[in-house]
Every structure is written in C-alpha cells, then in structure tokens.
Image 1: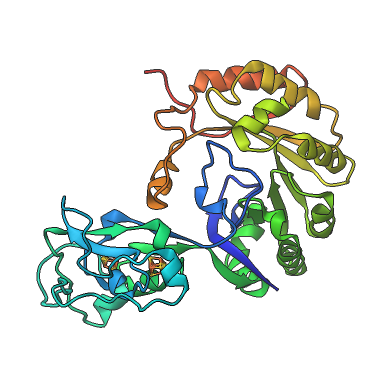
Image 2: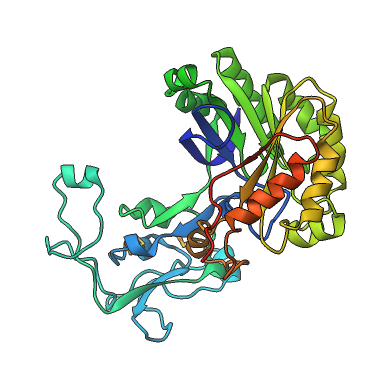
Amino acid sequence: MTGRVFNIQRFSIHDGPGIRTTVFLKGCTLACVWCHNPESIAPAPELAFFPTKCIRCGHCFEACETGALRLVPVGGTSTPVGGGSVPRAEGERGAETPRPQSETPRPHWDGGVGGGSVPRAEKERGAQRPRPQEGWERRYQKTLCRVCGKCAEACYAEAMVMEGRDVTAEEAVAEVLKDKPFYDNSGGGVTLSGGEPLLQADFCADILARSKASGIHTALDTAASVPWAAFEKALPHTDLVLLDLKIMDSARHRTATGVGNELILANARRLAETELPLVVRVPIVPGYTDDEANVAAIADFVRGFPRLDYVELLPYHRFAEAKYRRLEREYPLNGAEPPLAERLDALAAVAAARGLRVKVAPGGRKPP
Ligand code: SF4
Ligand code: SF4
C-alpha cells in the first residue's frame, strides 16, 4: 500500500539499537513548540525553500501558474515582474494563468562564471552554468500557493523542494534493505518515526511486516496520541517501541503540544501490558519539560512497567531553526538554548534514583 513520508534516513544511530534506517512518516497529532521536524506536522506535502541554493534563474516562477512566485527587484516593491498576482479565488475558478511578461528578466544560459550549485548530473551532461541575475530576488506569496510542486520540479538547483512524497511500502522497504548487512553486523534495523507514524497505521503495518519477513529488527517511535486501534495494527510486526513522554501535567502538556496527555498515558499503560520491550524518551526543553518535578513524575509513572528497558533524555537542540525558515514559518523557540550538560545529569539522577536505567543523548551544552 501507499503512504506519505518526508525522509528515509540511512545510518541513524539514535533511533533504537545498532545502525538503522529511519523512515519518517508525514503528519502528526501534536504540534510541540520545540518540534525538531516541523516538516512532519502537516499531513499534506509542503514547499520548502533553501535560499543559499537559489541561483535566481527564474525557472520556478515561470513554472508557477498561480502567481505565488515572482521575481522582484532587490529591496524593491512587490510589484510583480513575472507571474503576476492572482487572488486564490480567481485561481480556483481557473482564471487565465498569469505568465511572465516580456520585460521579465530571463534566465541566463551564457556559460557565465556565476555561482550557484549545479547538480552533478547537469554537469555531466555538459550543461552551462546559469549566471545569477544580480538585482533581482524571488518572492513567494504563500496564500497563492496550491502546493502543486511544479516549481520544485523546475528547480534543478534543488533550492525548492517538496517535503512529503508518496511511496509504496514495497519501495520504502527496498530502500531499507540496502543496508541490511549493517543491521546484521550492528544489531540494527528499521525505525518508523515522524511526525506520528501511527496516523498511517496500515502503511506502518505493511512496512513493518515486510521488514520482519526480510529478517530486519523493527522499532516504532510514537508519541502515542492516537486511538489504540492504530497500535493493534502495527504492534504484531514490531520488536521495540520507542515511546515519547513529554509532560505529565495535562494542562502544561496542552500548552506545549496543543493536546492533553490523557490518551497518551492510557496508551502507555496498555503498551506496558504487552510483551514488547519499551524505551521511554523524554525531550528536555528548557522552560517546558526540564523541571525536576516533571522528570520525577514521568519516572514514577513508568517505573513499574515490566518491559521497560531504559529512559532516555533527549536534549533540545536548535538544528530545526533553519527548517522553519525554509518552510517560511516563525520559529516558536527563538532564542532558546539547549540545556546545560550538568542540568541533564541532574535530571538523569532524578530518574535513576527511582531505580530506572537512564541514558542521556548527546547535545548538552557546556557552561559559558
Ligand atoms: S528555479 Fe530554483 S534556483 Fe531558479 S530561481 Fe527558482 S528557486 Fe532559485
Ligand atoms: S507549489 Fe505550485 S503554486 Fe506553489 S509556488 Fe510552486 S508552482 Fe506555484
């Protein structure tokens, strides 16, 4: 069957034992303010823009039929010089497609010495390097964008990409199987993550079943804010569950993630009754999850789980900041710093004092 992913990451070493391939599925039931994968949240594909790769060739705005993309003079007004502005309603009514006008700067293909990255395949075909068009810049008007992906198809510099693509379970597993020798040597395998992978429970079950049939260890990374019926589909094909628990107080949980935690905790209790080994992962985010009372409450909640292997503290990091920019979204935690390493050690001690095995993932900050 077919599902939607936004990344298939080989050589993962933080999503379960050994060397793994992590398949990131699109769509999430939460919207954590610290989300490290903002491209995962929306179920639908999204457009992302990498400004440093853009060579201002103009191919994208020529491909755009709604006027969402235009070239405008640097620092100038938003007066369109190509594409033109068409209100969404008109676009939806099938209004005449705005096309670049005659005065629109055209892409240069003169073999100039301008910068910009040219993909290897282009170079090998002997393509000339496009010259950046000084004095012009790209403008994107999100409200006019229909996320059709035509601009991304036209952008061979890969400055515009679509986050989210549909693949069959067979195709995903074929990608996963490429690294089977590494899994065999390291005790690794495949991990399904997201987003919330169980939003696509049938797709998860298909990938996991195919992976197990090929002799691959399977892990499921879930925030557990889904109906138990979704677990029932995936768990028969799962060897390990990575369960994300964030905040024990439901009101605080709602403030930070958009939903309360009642369903999550109910599912966690049911997971603990299965035969599956569990790893509980706690993001440590300053000001949101990093108080001792919260970590103590999580530790108290899971300490009686019979198949709990260990609790892992995952320090907040800022790598996602650039992703928010690419998606043209505001970064909710602007200015936040990763937790200090000594703070992480103190929180680990809180959980260890309750008889739990605790690991701290890399990323703690050294004191200034
Ligand atoms: S096609 Fe790509 S490289 Fe060319 S102007 Fe558009 S985003 Fe930039
Ligand atoms: S995704 Fe489609 S509508 Fe949106 S900017 Fe690109 S070409 Fe235009």
